[in-house]
Structures are given as structure tokens and as C-alpha cells.
Image (cartoon, rainbow, N blue to C red; front, side, top):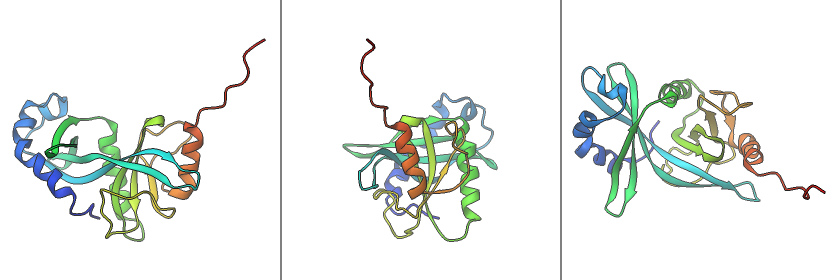
Length: 190
């Protein structure tokens, strides 16, 4: 599973600032890390803006997320963002999505077929999914979820959506869209 060559500039942005940034990190897990911390597995992070009337998910690339490995596990993540000068280190963070991302990636390795891993954020639901794109040759920085792509909600998932259960994009996206669409306002009380 590979996100493509577009991750190289994002990875270089980590490489130049990464050792200093880790020493200055404010996250408890990085401050407590024993041994070297290494950025790995760059995943393009897309944001779901909306689903169009024809069912196409409109997404945009928000950055690249790297898991930060120390020893045998990921202890944090780092993100890059696009600046006028190219990709630049943005911030470190930790929390439940780190272990959940690792778990979903291991799960994906055991699935039939080959996929290009990406992340898809659904801000209106405070939800993050591992997006398994079926076109291995696609540029990980672009595109939108195809109907047959798989979306694996990461834990913690919103109520009523099972974490780590793969869904076809064509099945999950309409349900998510319904949840984030505001209900029509009824008339004012008399």
C-alpha cells in the first residue's frame, strides 16, 4: 500500500525540521519517548466537503499525516500543510486515532485486493476514516472516493457507526451526508 510519489515533498518537510520538532514537542508521548522517533507511512489527509447531487464525494487535500514510530508502535502523529513555499511541518498530536489508524492499516493488509491508503475526515461528524482507494496508480493527493472504495471508520466513531467495519463508499457516504445535513426548519411556534 503506497500513497504515491506526492508524499515525498511532505516527507522532506518533516526530514528537515523533524529532529528539532520532536525535541520541542509538547505532546506527552513524544516527551516520554525512549529512543529515536521516526516519521513513517505518509497518508494524504482529505476532507469531505460535501456529497454532490449525483452522489460524488467532493473532497480536498488538507495535508499529509505521518505516524511517528518509537520502538514497536506509533506514539503520535505529525501533519504537514501546504504553504506558498510548498509542504511544511504543521504540528504533532496524539490520541485515540493513532492506535486506531494502525489497527485499520493492519486490517487492510489482510483484506482481499490491493488498496491505496488515504485518510478522509468528515468534520461535521468529528469522524475520521481510513479510505482504501482501489486505484493503486492514482495520485494520492487528488481524486474522490469511488463507489467501490472502502471506508473504514476509525475509533472513536460517531454513535451508530461501527469503528473498524469496512463499508463501500457508495453505502457509507449517503448515510454520512444524511447525518450532517441540517433538518429543515419548521414554522415558528404560534
